Amino acid sequence: MPSITTIIKITKAAIIDALMVVLAWVIFYRMSLWLFAYFEYNPRVYWVFLPAGIRMISVFIFGWAGVLGLFIGSVITNEAEMSSYVIYLAAISSLAPMVAKRTCKWWLNIPGTLQGLSGKQLLVFSVVGALANSLFSSLHFYVSGVSKGLNDFFPMFVGDLLGTLVIFYLIAKILQLISFIHKQITPSIL
Image (cartoon, rainbow, N blue to C red; front, side, top):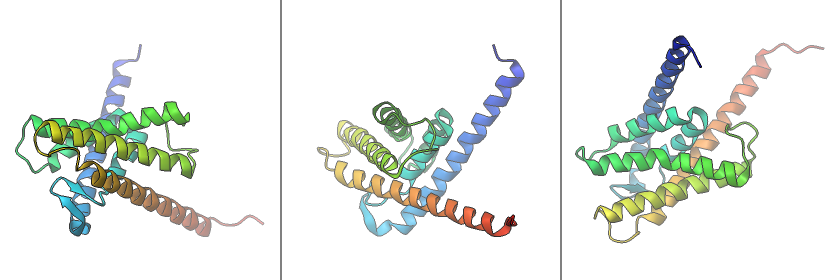
């Protein structure tokens, strides 16, 4: 059984991880609304939604602490009055990427981390994540009377998929830049 000190360290780390996810969610949510305001399908759905990529990365890197951060971030950025609708939507937004991760881990036999994932596996993970979130969210909109039918499903799926792919691409480019800079400043051994 872990000691109290170990439990406290793990709890502190999880809280810090969750807070980093909250910050990333809020920043990318605001940035996405600003950059892609023209691509609004309706006040709930955008044709490009960058925070969808934050969802996927957060769950892969931080696990359940990421889910907690996504939940809090989603509640913070929801402009509706605090209600069960907002709580359910935040729960869907934060749990759907975990469902996608678990499904892909089982289905594709991928590791629990991003290390060693191929481009094809990342693409499938992105599609499954966008599918899970858009399906669960559209069902929630329909059941709560916000939407008639599942007409939000397709634009939300496209927006989540494009947002995730943009975030994955940006991260790949940042990692390439870091690698390039590291090679430039590391002395060569002849």
